[in-house]
Image (tube, rainbow, N blue to C red; front, side, top):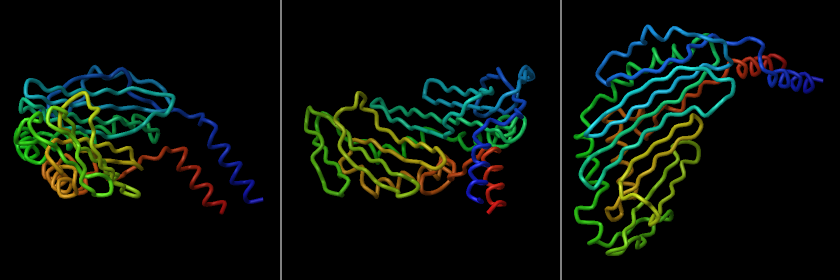
Length: 268
């Protein structure tokens, strides 16, 4: 009998709530990293929706930088995530991007409240010297000699040393670590890349997060390089934790899901 009641509550949870949220919509604007985060007066249009959404995108290159924000609505769930990527090019330049995709259904204009609470501090964190970041990452990920003039050895997932690339046949060492759960580490040689850029990439989807390296210095995909890169990312406030997490695994559960959980606990 009790099980039937829980099933009934779950089925009710699956039915979309009759109530909807008031969300700011059609609000897109650009800004500068060293400017105050302010919502333009033109962002005054609202609409009813099941979900409020927010997206921030930031790109940096030695020739330009770009920062944009977007508020809108959605009637269907999509992936919420944080991501960032650092690219070291052969010409010595660094490229950097940081993206947040957020949606919520807790309160009216919850996406706007999320942005006002979190974005000012994030912009302060990202306002650092990118040349200094490049100088610290470069000797860890990039070979001192031309990739065409050196043999490349990489670790595999069992920590064995494998020949990856030969002279005139380039490749990159690669390693990916899960930052939550089993924290699995995969290491390999990649000879299928279309770009020779050395990269550090991170993705955080709440319950799942990973950190990936691609580099062309022999044995650069080993644990010592990983640990040093994590320390550098934390030093520059790119990550929130020393182990490389962008968002500390904080998940924003929907209001309807929380109601379902609370009612089920009460019934039990």
